[in-house]
Image (cartoon, rainbow, N blue to C red; front, side, top):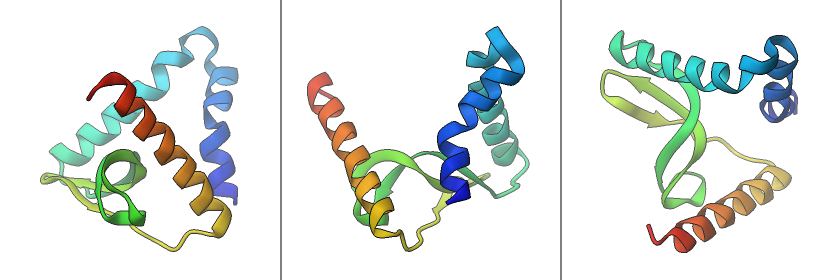
Length: 106
C-alpha cells in the first residue's frame, strides 16, 4: 500500500522540492537510472513502460511494470500477485492504453 501511494504521489513530492524545474527532473533521473543499469549491467528493478508478453494477463502492450534492466535491455518483467483492487486498477490502465493506441492508429 505504501509503495502504491509513493508511486502515485512522488511527482507531487518532487514538485514541492524542486519547484519550476521539477517537470524535467524526474524523467531525466529515470532515464539516467535506466541507462546506468543498461551500461553497467546493474540489473536494477526499475518501474517503466515495458512490452508485456503475458505478464499480469497483458499481451502486446507497453505498460508500467517492474522491469529488470541490464546489458540485455529489458531482461525480465517481475510479475507478482496483485490484490483485487490492484488488478482492477491495472485493467483500467490497460483499457486507457488500448483506447489511446486505437485513437492514434498505432
